[in-house]
Length: 377
Figure 1 (cartoon, rainbow, N blue to C red):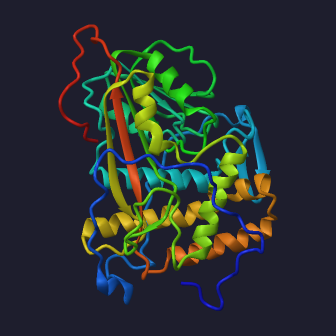
Figure 2: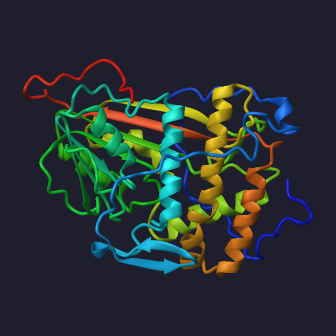
């Protein structure tokens, strides 16, 4: 909860977006996570607030800075190629956040890099690759596959597995690649103008029998103590007014520029509409802080909390100042309030991770099978 010393939000109010409804999930709601009651009163000896989060140092060489042009705004660096298409920064702090989030994905999925039942795919696309960390892990796991990672920002390493390439590209342009056997899309909510068109392009650029997988978090913070947390719509937290304002502002800003942070909730239906078969949707409940009693869930919550603390400024600086007309100072005050509430151990905050995958009808060539097991990293 906020204290008297907590920075107050600016007077500007951002009403939650209207006119959108959340599709009913295809599976039962996420199971409840048992909370660690002692955690709300005291820090866990192994996972305290001051626990250090180690990150592997990369020895890979960066791409030539000569091809990189950037925009500096609100103390953050943004891409300049097709400027404005993507409102999150691409600076070192954001790259660290993306790599840490990759670690969270690995913890949540117990090391699985993918869930679609693929088996030695010949050509793989990771569109919106970010730092390229998923593509590098996948290329290491499948040395016989050709892996291509594309992104608007040339921030990927230059020292990569020999079967991996990176390209600066806009996935919303017309695709001109040879067909792929597996396409991976992760953490793209709020980035695209036309999701059905993108999924249609993915369908057209898959080999018969190829698989598309979409992985993303819903952009909500929910409280497990709230019996209505899984009701359709944007949840309203009772004890986190800064988070409420932040989330509502992000959704409103996205709408104003023709995008949505709610794409993952509709993705299964869109995939079926463009022709995918055997479409599967999974929802995984992920704690946003180390409040869970289970040790692995507590570890997930610790790392995801750090991701969220870093995201409090990454997600929103451009949305609030460029789109909603806030001053940088007003957004800094809001961001500070969000970080304060994210650290409140009395809140049992969580969000749902969606994993959706589907198959393009037809038979694979050259005897490439679908396999039966999910992929382990």
